Image 1 (cartoon, one colour):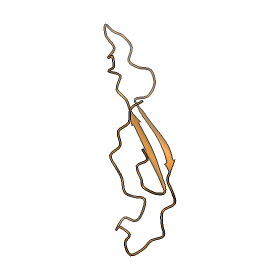
Image 2: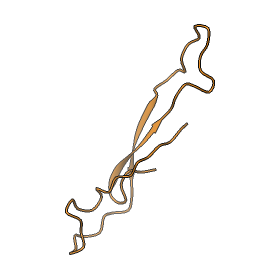
Image 3: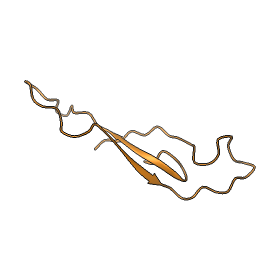
Image 4: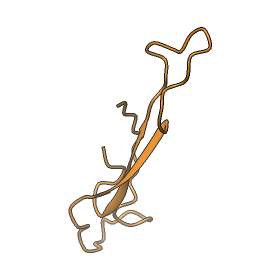
Length: 67
């Protein structure tokens, strides 16, 4: 899920190598544990009197994804 409600943002995916965890000296899961990709939401509306102090596109959400 994109971390902004409008404009450009990022999608962060994290994983753990624990299902099942490596045993008896086995290797950890190959590849990166974190993957970051860009995302583009709809354009932000023009500034209005109701704009937040930080402007549009800065509303961040806690995102947790697995792959």
